[in-house]
Image (cartoon, rainbow, N blue to C red; front, side, top):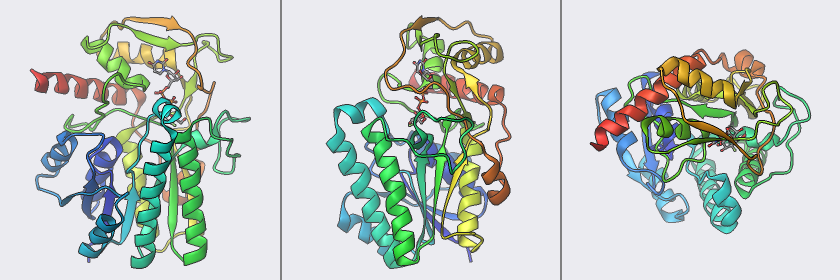
Length: 340
Ligand code: UFG
């Protein structure tokens, strides 16, 4: 029988791509989202890619009764929890909003997962490593004190899951994402930042399309080969496939431990300037950019050692940065067409 996966935050950037990959791998998916940080574009795009309507529930996971009702309505075998606020700067300005939303919602789904025996996959982040002492980072590299309430919610939620697994005999996986970028090859789903983008690639594509005047490169005096920060940019479709591997591992009872953590990255450090240059070359575009002061809170360099995911999940990133940057540009152009 087909297994059912609940994707909380399934109308968002990562959730929509994961939904597509899960369905294509043969899972039934229920999408639940409170639509607080997105519109229907990605939900419609998912349905267009799959050629059918998917069950959609408008649910705020901070609402205990609504969360209970959702788990009563469907038989959920596994839950992937994306529903959370994610802007680092905003979390510094509004910590209570971040703690309330990101922690309450996860506590509520954990409670229902416990009651109904559902497996839980939590979307964590490389932010838990902070400024690492050694690169690349492995899953056993120390977690550093969080530098923002957002980062703190990722650490706390990892701990919630670890403790629940230990106490209640549940199974859980935390995936630590590095820098997810790009869009689905169909250009039907992608990132939809509200307002001025915080992240590099949406800022690049919006500058290229003329929505932003100039890209600021935050600092060229870091102790790196070209002076700009190093990150591990992971293609969104590759990232989504890691979730299918992780869910399958949980549902097929193949876990070595009831709580596992995996890095989801490429293992390749790329500098900000390299990424900008690749974008220009791949898409034949001259980007207007300037060197600006460092952005407070940025770490110099962080990239993944993805060995564990390769060995245990049978997953590795396959798409090149060039392909991914082409997909990001195709998506931005499609958005511009749709807005005409
Ligand atoms: N950058 C610029 N100009 C911009 C935006 C970003 O130069 O306009 C630079 C940043 O300084 C950084 C790099 O591009 O060096 C990547 O920045 P992003 O904002 O795209 O990504 P971050 O690495 O800061 O953050 C990402 C996620 C967070 C997550 C973190 C974990 O956005 O959610 O990785 O490391 F917490």
